[in-house]
Every structure is written in C-alpha cells, then in structure tokens.
Length: 84
Image 1 (cartoon, rainbow, N blue to C red):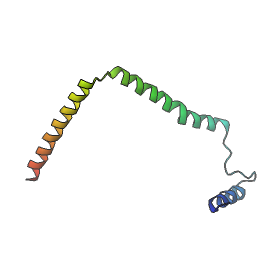
Image 2: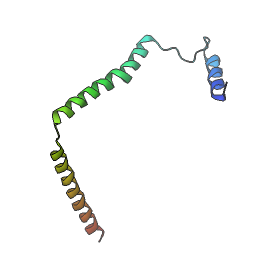
Image 3: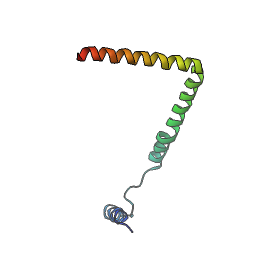
C-alpha cells in the first residue's frame, strides 16, 4: 500500500467506527448524479439546438472572420495612437 492509501485508511479508521470516512445518504448520491449527469446533458442538448438553429454556412463564416479581422486591426491602430 502506498503512502496516500495508508493515510486514507488511517483517517477512515480513526474518524469512523465503520471504517469509512463518509457514508452518504441516498439523497446525496442522487443529487450528485443529477448535478454531474443530468444538468450537463440538458445544457448539451440546448447547445445543440442553438447550433442547429444558427445555420452558419461557409460563406457566412468567412464573412464573420473577415469582419473580426477588420475590427482587430482598427482596435490595434487605436491602441497604437493612444500609446504615441
């Protein structure tokens, strides 16, 4: 047994009469399952629906990238003028 396993074993026996550090009630386990599985799954489905509705074509994507590049150049020029 490595040192971390020994420490966990010691702590479990030291602070619990049953040999377990924590015994979770079923309601806590259910809440953990919901938080770690159901909520992210719902968020993922919502994200898929928004993405599906967005309907970005290659041409639209290229236009967006071009506009962002123009904005970045303007911002960089403004920052250069502020510095000088």
